[in-house]
Image 1 (spheres, rainbow, N blue to C red):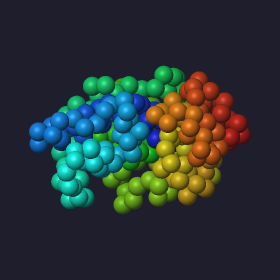
Image 2 (spheres, rainbow, N blue to C red):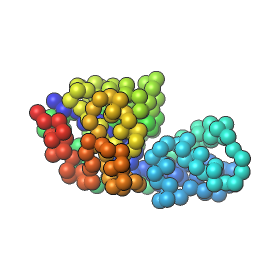
Image 3 (cartoon, rainbow, N blue to C red):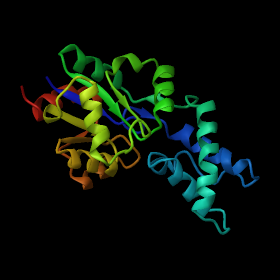
Image 4 (cartoon, rainbow, N blue to C red):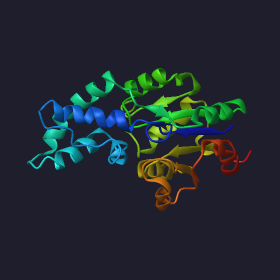
Length: 222
């Protein structure tokens, strides 16, 4: 039995526009405009809420500190929760690929650095929560990616074996998580970095979800 674990943001779904909007809401609340751009800053969106806040603060032309980031982070999460799926879309072919994996007996799960409750809400809104046999979020355990334990738990809770698993992701965090867990990693090329993600030297690059079932079979042969 094989297990395929997916990252969420930037891998299964393009959530960048809604994440950027939530960060901009923090700045708008202080009358500081919208320093972040949903297209230009999509890569930063996938690096997390605090990364977006830091980038926005750096563009305002005023002094700031991590205390400002910490103060705004709960506001960002609140804004995001209130409008979590306005622009978010699953990447083409993602659902069909997950269904194909399940139909042949593979286990599938999610390991994300999005807070668990937000991940649950988003997947339910997108109508795909039932496709995944496990979900580990940033706050499910005491650690988060790139620590390997969230990945391991996502495999185990899906009913799989870590030694027969792989991670599909889109960032250096996913690459480092897989390396720490001692498993193969597939990185998608349809995220903000595009084919340039090859610089991270994953075990495989995925440009089309239609290719994923065969790719998994090749990397983890029966």
